[in-house]
Length: 127
Image (cartoon, rainbow, N blue to C red; front, top):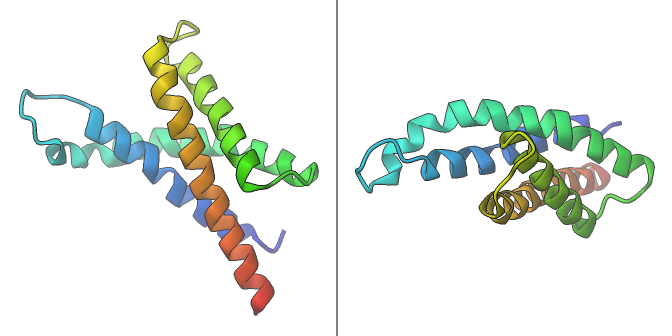
């Protein structure tokens, strides 16, 4: 796998998306300024990166094996990973709102990962 550095970069960058969302949407005070929550990104990042590695990486490796790594398969897989994450977070009893947030967030995260890995692969081919 000569694309390993891009795979790692994809995981590291893609985890920023749910981490940033989680930090901005967490209300800890009555202050309406969400930028005050940006300090929580490292905390959310650790959980998001864990989810990317434990759920996303095996899904990507399976997709590679099946030769199904495309933009649309990343969106589908990310949606399912988001749904599974909702189940995990709510201990098997997610609310509809959990799915409405985590499914698109999972899809967007997987798409960012796919984009970075694909750009890296194309860059490696050009060199």
